[in-house]
Image 1 (cartoon, chains in turn cyan, brown):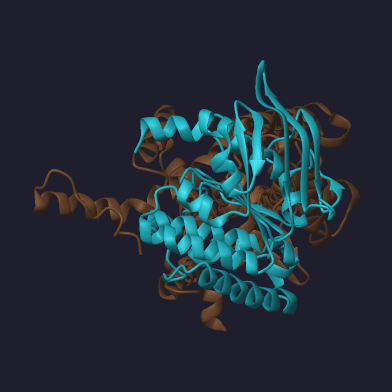
Image 2 (cartoon, rainbow over the protein chains, first blue to last red):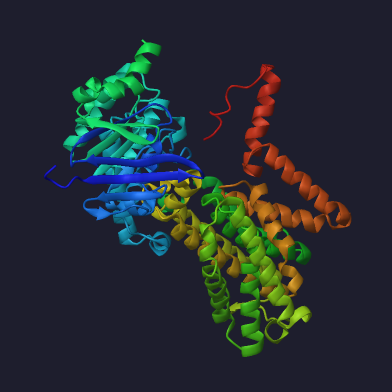
Length: 260
Length: 331
């Protein structure tokens, strides 16, 4: 690869007690690439996303983002650098409004503090107007067609997934990590999601997507990394991955036999 | 503008403030007003803890430490160093806030650990107040604290103090409402509702927890200064763990996440404890039972009572196995 990738993880490992959840995993995501991360349950996909988003610190290895070493940096720092994520198990702020949820994602671009709030300074007013406008724009971009002032906890499941995406993209990150974005979505919502993923890339983001729905992954991704038992098993284009005997053995083959 | 300040449903608030202003005329008894004064002081304390617990979800069992620091700082400055009352007022709040800055290391703790750490902090401050006689007069306490004043205005009677304290409660309430609807309040809410999601959105929880501790301590310090002037005398035993628990109960009884609830909780518990003096031994039992009941019926405290009542009535009439309208009841 001639160009430096946006994200380059090399030899990343994570131990929980005596268990090696991840061992020597490498991954490269280029700018404005849609990259898939697949593997059987327990392969370490979510752990890897937790490391990349800073919720966990790796036990070994290097993570470079935009050429800079970021392994072990805390989540809020990485969020500021431009890495945002969604969660497999939804983590919205249920008691906040839809627009309030998304406004949290824009936090880093505003500065108003306690005194601004108490005195309602011009800065606080200006920022609040900006936050609302940007949040609404992100809600619209995600295709979330609901009353922005309703509590987020009252949204349907698929809408809550879109809300998480809106919160993650409102600050225009460089890299968006989606952890099973299609889980619990019906076919038409999936169709919408695929379209959204492509529009996000056009907006200038690179995406790393964990997903169990192979149709979505194969359709959306430029490249795919396969994990198995905490190790990198394969990396390549969707065609290469589908033809890779090791992958078929570990993952596709098994599910083909068991499932459909 | 007025609507922006008062928000929706402004009528009940205006009526409540009007009633609060009228009370000294309606019930001019000194004893009653003294209890009302105390209730307003506790309303300030409960509001402070509500911000910490209700908004940010951080439990402090050491509010008495900040409360006592405010009270002692102002009282000692006035009686020992002849500092003007107004200056001492600010100093009490500021010193309490500065003390909270020393807690920054423990704001890294989560949940129960943080609560226990604040408990330890409260014990330490109480021990300092009790034992450092050169500074605090020790078990003797601080005597002859003059009434609160602001320039030519001296709040030296029960009803005068009442208005000063009411003004402080309204200021703190209004300020906290603004905070709640700001970037700062949103960050606190985010941390409480899902800390991981807040972190991955770029919010540094330690920074916000520290800030909210400082704001809370500042508010508790103000409450302490008011108490010192109201009582005219400070004793170390006014600032024990029992006091911290007392403030916590006001917040829980009033209803978590509700600023109005904190004020109502303070008023209800102060009046209950004063007028239940005849049943002194049973007071804590009644308190405890109340607390358990409020936990059973959810975190909404007194604020949730109308809804609970409506549900009960609905159940009687519908005779159905379970009411389905639980969610729709929220305005």
